[in-house]
Amino acid sequence: MSFAHAEPESGVGNKPNLGIFADPIAQFAAPGEEAVGDLLLQAMSLMGVAYRFGGSSPETGLDCSGFIQYVFRKSLRVNLPRTSAEMARAGRVIERDELAPGDLVFYNTRGFQYSHVGLYLGGNKFIHSPRTGKSVEVVNMANSYWSQRFNGARRVNRGGSEWKEPVTARAADRPPAEKKLAEKKVAEKKTTDKKSADKPAAEKKGRSSTRAERRKVAREQEAERKTASRKKSEQNPRKKKKPD
Picture (cartoon, rainbow, N blue to C red):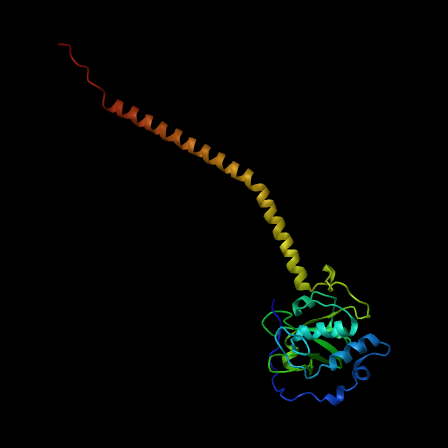
């Protein structure tokens, strides 16, 4: 199992101003969205917790997906998958202009899609656990590093009900690239199955054709041999032996 981390942002070296995020509910949550407010409050309470690869507890450290999994479980009792790639297959795909506080935002920070995940706060900002040597922080999505690596967003149930099983993705909600890949695999499997079904008949036909060709060649060679022998006899007739 692989866990994700983010590369450092260029030009980012100072910790974010905690004062402007002191009241995440007032700053980001829409009126009446108590569940979202609880989620953001839980996330903001982990500001400063150190990154730890594979970490899933604030006491020992959190990686990006461990951080997201923890805040959803702790605040909403929603069980999300463990890795960022698995989380990308959960919930409903949404466009960037549909982003709302509490949505998951995904990034390519390791050379493959959905290798990093954060929690959208609103105001074009998200909170995440970035990488070794850093801690949970709030960053701006407009930063060139993040804007170039944005992979999409997902919205999962955040109504506060308890989930007994991890959230799973429906085929209709999969990213377009995943849908295309799945369709391609199905088409390839059908082609392979058809070839397997047709193979015995084709091989039998091939063997029959080969035998017929060999017989034809043999007949032609035999005919040529007889013709050559007859011509030789005609050119060199045997002399009759005189009686003693």
